[in-house]
Length: 312
Image (cartoon, rainbow, N blue to C red):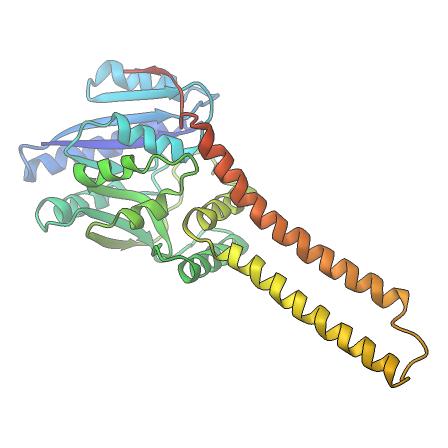
């Protein structure tokens, strides 16, 4: 019985040895309970520019359970998760961050859920965002509220990528081979029985976060576009609303002229404001359509999600 621990890494040279020490201690303790359990550690180097790959190679030299895939450049965490699932060999697969914000201490409980309780997956979610900037926390909560309202796929508020799953579920996720990936949504879309485990936010053990506000905003848009067509409906609604308003304005102008309530129609200033308003709404709607079109364009290219430069 093999457990694959998938660890995406990007410029995490300081965190790699600390993570390895913690996770091996946890898995060694797990073998006392499940004696038939074997483990492999699969590090995904996402085109790091520091010594992350060297640290992983050093671990490989002293522990044959360590394997790695090194990308030719930075392809992003979504590609890292996909590569980990694709190259893993375990009967059970767990995805973890190397910065220790996903506590290894939760792993025995998570494994028990899928191995003994019969769940297909055990996932984690943060119940607090202590240590995170207030503005970032606010927008994160609003994003989860929004996407759960406009999407049929449920995405748990505070959900982490830290989860363990059966081989069957991992293969199901791999079968969703779309280029524009939003894994948090894919987990819910493929279904299967999932047990949620809550924990309080943990500060990263070393290094700095690679997720800027702009990157998180782009990732949020990715999720909305991937699992909802509601923005297109909003664009249509704007079009209907503006057409109705234009019709009302026409009736008002005709009435004013017929009843001689004004010497002339609206002046140029009112006209300019109306033109700017309608133009802005048109550009907004075109932008929404353009986002969906760009995603379709990228999908039709059939480019690989990642390119591996080196792997064990």
